[in-house]
Length: 74
Image (cartoon, rainbow, N blue to C red):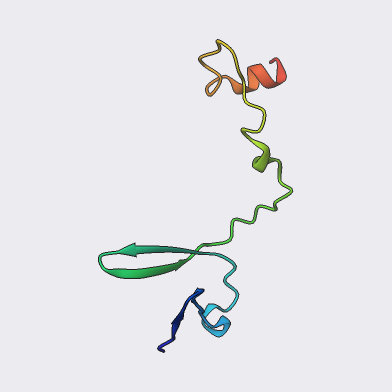
C-alpha cells in the first residue's frame, strides 16, 4: 500500500491497525518502523500512575530501597 504524506503527516488506515490502541514510531537504519505496543492491562485510574507524584524529599538517600518504610512506617 502506498499513501500520500501531507502537511499534517501520514494517515495509516484503521483497517491496517485492527484493534491496536498504541504504536511506537521510530526511524531506524533509514526506515520508518511502526511497532504495536502490547496493552498493559493497566487502567489510567490505577494507583501505579501516581508513583512519583509525591516523592520523598530531604536528606533521605535510601528512599528507592526503603520506600515502604517511609510511606507506611513499617
